[in-house]
Image (tube, rainbow, N blue to C red):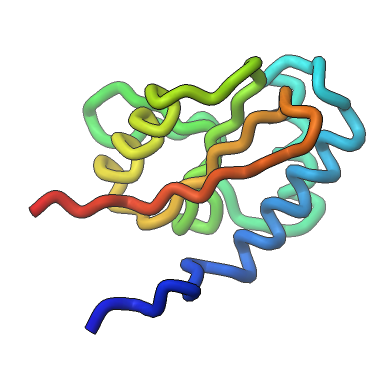
Length: 124
């Protein structure tokens, strides 16, 4: 039986992560560099006692994810004018390689933060 359309994967931890993302953008604004956002995210994850790995190498592909949160969610941090299809494809590759179900794509350059939830598509 397929999952309900309105069911979310890892809603509690996702909510915590996104709350931290909003507070980071409120503090740094929209013109900081990706590393500055990542550094402050890491500090906030530590303060919140959220388990994470930063700049984590997945598989032998050489791909490095920005954050893996609680071994359940990949957080990809962007600081660019616009998110493109290649950003989604990149995150989907990371999800495939790591076997993680959920990815969050967050572009801090947007005036209003609009995190994107990306679900791993299983190959058939």
